[in-house]
Image (tube, rainbow, N blue to C red; front, side):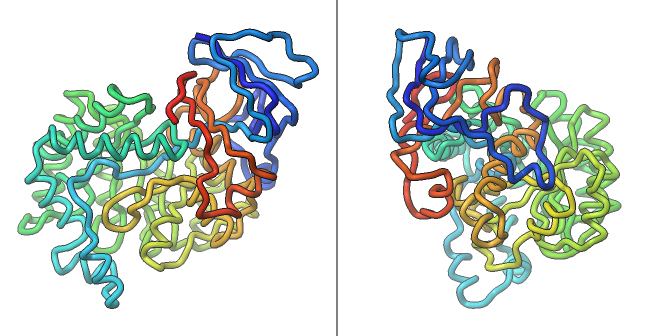
Amino acid sequence: MDLLIKNIKGLVQVRDRPPKKVCGSEMAELPITGNAWLFANNGKIVEYGLMEDLPVSEASEIIDASGRFVMPCFVDSHTHLVFAASRENEFVDKLHGLSYEEIAHRGGGILNSAIKLQQTSEEVLFQKSLERAYEIIGFGTAAVEIKSGYGLTVEDELKMLRVARRIGNETPLIVKTTFLGAHAIPKGRDRNDYIREVMEVMIPRVAEEHLADYCDVFCEKGFFTPEETEMIIERGKKYGMTPKIHANQLHNSGGVQAGVKMGALSVDHLESMGEKEIEVLQGSATMPTMLPGAAFFLNSVYPPARRMIESGLAVSIATDYNPGSAPCGKMSFMISLACIKMKMTPQEALNAATINAAYAMGITDVLGTITPGKDASFIITKKIPSIEFIPYAFGSDIIDQVIIKGKTMK
């Protein structure tokens, strides 16, 4: 099936020979072609250009995008989309002044989600997660990374990853899965014994069923040390899992240094960053990924995006969609937070949510830019005055249509 979108007010993120990522001052550059058309066939971008040079006039589907922008779908490279139940009671605890750590010490947080997930069947867990998958599609997301980590037993971690894989098979989303057995130490478990189980039982079982693309560790004070992180990540690498690391959310935890040392594709969170962490990232292939939704919900310090960009780094943003610290999968809101709270420009934030986010998921060959041969996965906005309107109108639904691989979803 072929698709022609014509009279596009602005075709956003047009790059004939796209780099794998954009860094530093390059992040301020967002190529936009005005008064444009785009032609796709069999779910792939074929060509595009100016309306005055439109060579085709017929297609199976024709969309008139007058007054609208067309841009690549969002890529959400860090989520915990598979979970059993919400945690609004802890939200109220936060309003009463309890910290993230205090709630965790009382049996809340990750351990709370683990209990609920362990009591939920795989089929029910899939149906609940499927609703969230279609929710984020409606928000303009075409690719999502989904972590385990709310199981904390061998069978429940496998259950989570099977559900995540099934979402990738039964929805239009590109799904990458991450094993995060090292998310917390289960209540009543000996620390060393649980870490041994993660390394010697969980990782081999996950690999045997081909359930995870990545291996992640929550490297944070009170959770897992840098030394433990490196041991677990090294084990995952031996079984073919690329490293990703939860780093520096609450403290300067050493997670950034561990991530770069272990060749992590990304280090994520980064609310606590110093010059040493920035220096370590410079010249590395590791993508710093910021999760402004978590900082917003926890009312914590935001990552120093401005400082990282001015230091020449590439940065990406993701939602961290999860029931405890970021119950929101809307990437356009993350873009608004990046601008309002982290002082990124709209162009930088949109680059962070598309091309750099695709890098953080390892899918720059198919998503992230408007480029011939890549997936025909687009957002068509409503009639808006400019691309800057997207982060400016943070509460508005600016999406008119979502197209994934050439098929209209919304």
